[in-house]
Length: 197
Ligand code: SAH
Ligand code: CA
Image 1 (cartoon, rainbow, N blue to C red):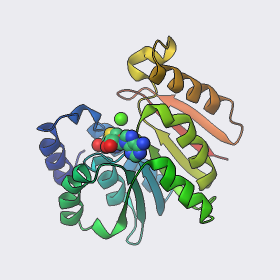
Image 2 (cartoon, rainbow, N blue to C red; image 1 turned 180 degrees about the vertical axis):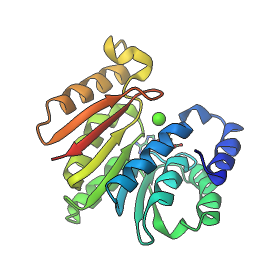
Image 3 (spheres, helix red, strand yellow; image 1 turned 90 degrees about the vertical axis):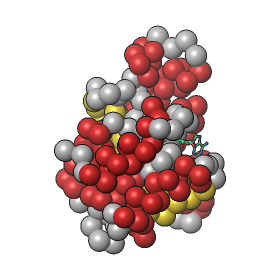
Image 4 (cartoon, rainbow, N blue to C red; image 1 turned 30 degrees about the horizontal axis):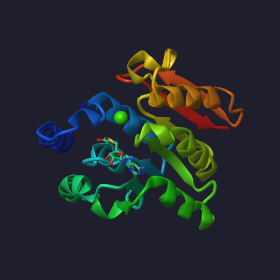
């Protein structure tokens, strides 16, 4: 059940390099479902690319809901911005340019602990464990963190490179994190879903 506007953004992105980085339609619907389910208002996104997941989440938010969207590449985000505008959610998406770790540290230093309802982690895999740790502090009780690519095409089971190794470590860390109830949902490349107790 992908909306027309998301389909158009997906089609435009398909012409670009790295379009395989984009989430799949059913992942987008699932995240929108979660946002509706927990009635999320303040959300965080780490890894925007051409803005598909940000749009899917933003369209599921209430009128004054927000997506704080972190990425280093503004050119890609500007493709998404056209669709954010058309969908009437441009003002709901606060794009933060720069290395996501720096943006997240800024949020922490501004005292934003426990203020986000929902977060999606989908940027560089090497920083996944750090992203999770900081996001875990930023999310409130009853909030949800979703991490993409946690199967890493199955390589997470037998890590042979740095990305697979860090994803494996991240999964292990999450599994032992008593603050969260979690499960690894095998949609596409694996969505880890974590509910803060
Ligand atoms: N969620 C997106 C796909 C994200 S692809 C979608 O639905 O289409 C991964 C993104 O992470 C890329 O846009 C890349 O620019 C960004 N990225 C990689 N390393 C980063 C870093 N250190 N800080 C912020 N963004 C980063
Ligand atoms: Ca991804």
